[in-house]
Length: 247
Length: 299
Image (tube, rainbow over all chains, first blue to last red):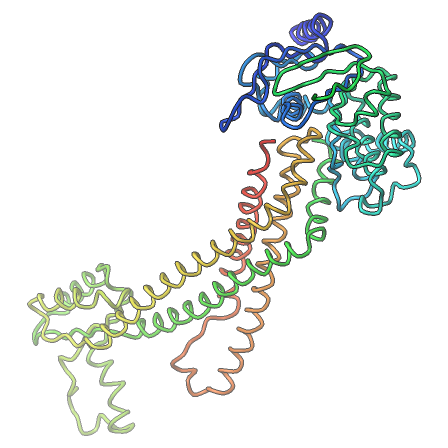
């Protein structure tokens, strides 16, 4: 018990000192080619809203995969929520991911289940009591504006609505961090703005939000912290920044 | 684990069967075809073996003794015979008993009138039934080596034919089982490969949201086992219906053969076949789904 408390305290201390996401001189090399990430150092504090931008091949996707612990770094260290991800054992990964909401460009919903079941699935994984689940799921669906569509299957929804379901699923367990990998990549401008507005609202509740995007208009308009990557390195990191053009 | 999670897992296992109807149907059909062939050949081969065994049980060796051999010595030889591994049963027939059996048969009820003495005196013998007909030669050689033994009656041809057919059936059974196994593995691995592509995305999503390996795997494993059990139950039902029909047809149409052909009953065949098929079906489903899911768990 004392040991557990000590670990929790130490983790809190690490978050206070280095941020909720901390990459220290991280390198990732795939077996086939040049390094996808080359000596990246990045601190993201609790409650921040950060855009990660860059062209294809800049290393954004690799960065997200490292944060999800889908990949491990070849060099340096990746700490998320005070945990050194390299030290995480395979069986500890699920528990780690439960504190991490994820949204993808292609929504990644369970196609054969309805909206309610897709969102409830995240709660089932953490074994939320059914009575609680019956309160939480409709509530989060109302937050993302889908209260009336809980019975619909993903294919009956528009792209924007599917992304809202994915967002609801990512948020229903109240994660500390929300990672969004090109969340507006498949959406029209109107839906893109609505999703970004939701992300901003989520961030206002204290959730750290990291958005990987190509959407210049949104990045420039939102005036948030912008980390720009190019060929595996961070070329700029600006508070209230904008999208930096390649040229 | 909470009861609600267990119930959810079982529900998902059943629901998965209907979610991927074509995959489920392909899997059930694959397992059912393999087990149907297995059951069919088992039924045929088991009956062949049973008929042969019945025929073997009728094969006997008869031992006659030299004139003047004492009753005590004959009894002692009888004891030695019954201890041999080749022997399943030994019956002693005294010369009086033999005359009482054959006399009326050949000379009518007053058979004793023309024969003041037993004409079959000295013909007392042991009738020996074999435990395994292929061991007849060894037994006969041993019997012939006993000085008090005058004659050993046996049929070399019956024994060698039966034991040859028995061996042939054993080889054929083995061959068929190996071929069926190879075909089953090929078909099942193909079905599993289809399953992998169907499942890949779903498993990845579950893992990204933080599902444990067990939580991801359990419904798929249950689904696999349900499919395996269904795939076993269908051929069992078909074979049972066919077997019952075939038995009654043969008994009705070929009543004359009933003395020679002694078929196994439905209970005898299915007492073995039912648990084996259900176990193999569930086992294939279990292993197939474990293999399918395992490939995608490392996300």
